[in-house]
Image 1 (cartoon, rainbow, N blue to C red):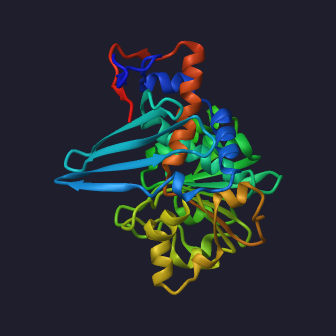
Image 2 (cartoon, rainbow, N blue to C red; image 1 turned 90 degrees about the vertical axis):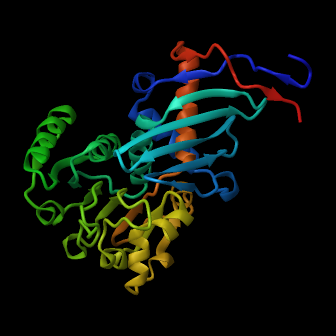
Image 3 (spheres, rainbow, N blue to C red; image 1 turned 60 degrees about the vertical axis):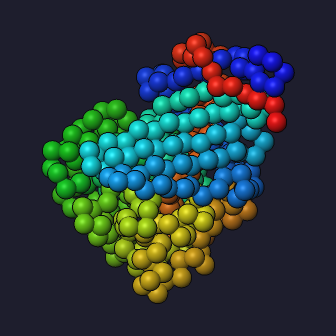
Length: 334
């Protein structure tokens, strides 16, 4: 290459879904995200996601350049609503020389980072004692939430609920054996949530009506809500947000303005905005948890994707995991 352009060395590394599975672990992911969120927030470093709507689907881009980090990039999601299919791609650029360091399958990372970020939040929200836990949902996200929470909390007993009997019973059997914690299936969300110290919400209803009602939730409970990530989606009853003494947002602007739960609470006359803080403030020690109900609200963030992708890429390089690409993109001098 001439002086105006070069293909960077080392070559771009591709990490498949199988590579991510081999490299990732809960404790490492939680620790990395907890450390990253303890730093002050820089909104310019992680702008809000953008969505391009196409016929039958959409393309979403979530960029981030975590302050102080060596790598920056974005996650792109391509969704075909017509076929019910989606794919996730994370790009990672070295900020030192602008080379494309890695292309990473982002499917598994999305689930890991969502649950690991919630677990990082729980380290500052939960009391240090045995806890009764409710899980609303029995799918991939619900399983990830319980696995991650079990790494940071003393879970004494778990009740899981979902509309399909076989799904909730399978969840209870498999997660009880895996985690060594009593996990039982509950026939209704009310039965699972009533009296729980920790409520993990990871399922929206089919008609977008709330799956968790305000009157079910104990006065000092901690609620994790990850199922309302767009304006059209709802998971928590507005009155529950009205009861909260604290709402913690992983992405402050997006939770306030793009989460259906927050929009519905505002429309119902509840001033949830007044008690909402960023996860950076909580984990940075600048906003302690008050008494009463605390809610962790997540819409997801490119910040989380890039923090975790950086950790996995550095592990891959150290362990010789992944596929170096035989060709690369041109890096040019500007």
